Length: 193
Image (cartoon, rainbow, N blue to C red; front, side):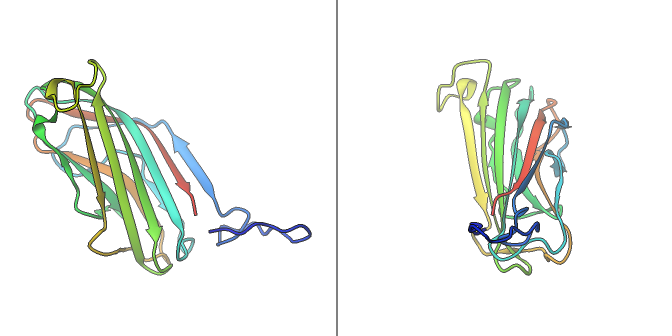
């Protein structure tokens, strides 16, 4: 975590721990639609610069958008991506979560924390989706919502901080039958600690 600048002291412009430029953020409204049954980055892909992360450095990626459950219901698998690979157990939203052809909105927040400033990362994912054409009635596929969480609870994943590291939110449909779609409308990435 950064430290406060005392009166009379000099603020140093650096992205290192305690630096004046330690925290930053980016955002975009690039639209990406996934209809594939293979792992595909849904959010924009952001890069942590090489050698920037230190022990305790934290980053957050948030994304949101809309979609249509297929006319043939399909599972939707969620991926927290670190350097293009899944980090964590990749939870799925059941094919029966919504009625066929239902329109939904979704939001995801992904967390990346450098454990040792060398190569170990703890990561987490929070995901929520709900119908937007009907009032939400929990437990009713025609009028419901679904949530999922994931993380690297079995131990840290590795990505060497000496190299640039990419972060993204990815998804994959169980199959393309029924034409399910999910679209990312906005993504934000920021360094928070």
